[in-house]
Image (cartoon, rainbow, N blue to C red; front, side):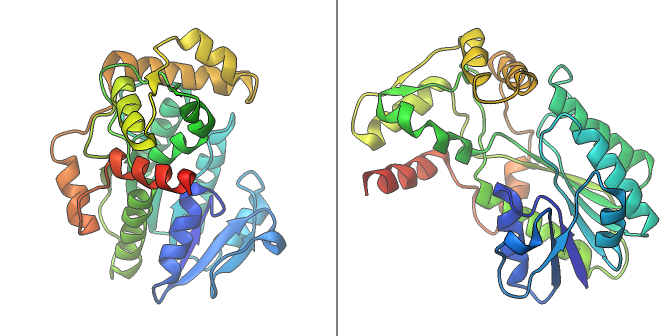
Length: 290
C-alpha cells in the first residue's frame, strides 16, 4: 500500500504526511528538493514538480492512492489536470482532492472556480475520489500577530460570518479519507466533504475574541477591500491580491457558513467536535505571551 502526497511541505501537506506516517502504510512525499526535506521516519521524499510530466510519471509509478493538493498559483488548474490525467494513466483508483468550500458558488473568485473546474473533471472522468472543501483556515490569522498586538484585527471578513476551520481538523479528515480509500478492497464512490468550524466569525467577533484573550483593546479594521488589496499587493503578485479581494467580497456579501449536516459529518470522522476559533486564538495568545 502506497500513498503519494503532493503539497507535502505546506501547511496542510506536512500535517497529512505526519498523520499518515503513524499508520502502517508507505508514504511518498512529493517535493522539488528531496535533499532538503525533513519528513518523519519512514516517509520517502520523492522528487517531482506538478508541471514536469516526466517527474510526475516517475513519482506516480507504483502508487495506489493520491493526495492532490496544489497551491493557489496562476497555473493551478493546469497543474491539477496534468496530475489527474497522469494518475489515470497510472491506473490510480484512489484519490483525495483538496478543493475549497463554496467552489461551486463563488464563481467570480478565480481560485474557487479553478478548483471547481478540477472537481468537474473528476466527475466527468468518473474518477473515484474524495473532494475536500475546506473553509478559511484559522491559522491564516497567525500572520496578523503584529496588527493584533497593535490593537487591530485587519482581515476584512465583514458581518455575515465565516466558519473558519482549524488546519489540524483538515489534516485529520484528509488522513482518514486517504486511509479509508487506501484500505478499501475496491475503489470507493465519489464523495464531497465540507470542512468547517462551529462558529461563524465576523470581523467584530474576531476583534472581541482577541481583545479578551490578549487583555487589551482590539478593534475591527473595517470592510475596506480597496485598501486591503493595495496593502496586500505590496507583498504578493497583483493577481493574487485581487483574487483574495474577490474572495473577501463574497465573504462580506454572502458569508461562508456550513451546509446543513456538515459539522455532524466532520465530528463523526474526527471523533470529536471541530475546534473553535476561540480555542485557536487562546492557544496563539498564550504562545505569544510566553
